[in-house]
Image 1: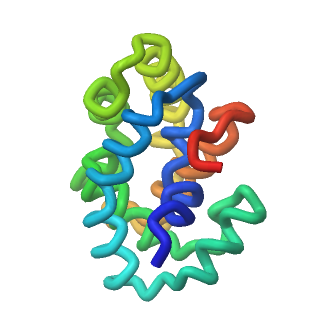
Image 2: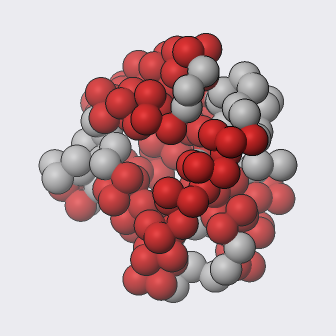
Length: 148
């Protein structure tokens, strides 16, 4: 499976940065590759599904629990199935060296924290909330994508 396509579909929250360095992009992709592989295998997400998500600039066709698997393993969806904005901000500082990029991560994490107030049907499982989170990231990232 192409990690690049998975990243575009799942990691919209990294695409809101203004000018990620090639070094930051490569380090990020390397660090998340095992997580993507595990979750893809566990939830049977095909490269075709990911390509459709990429082409449509939407994660609509991706399985919610696949998205949750990734976000949980990344540490931004907690055991209660809620978005952990502080963990997302910390990840932004971990993955991106540029202060402007880190500030954009903080801004979007603060905006998307509102999804925790949404009613979801799966309670602590986190699948529904993860889809809401991905939609929020995509909506608020702006036009820049380091992966395209």
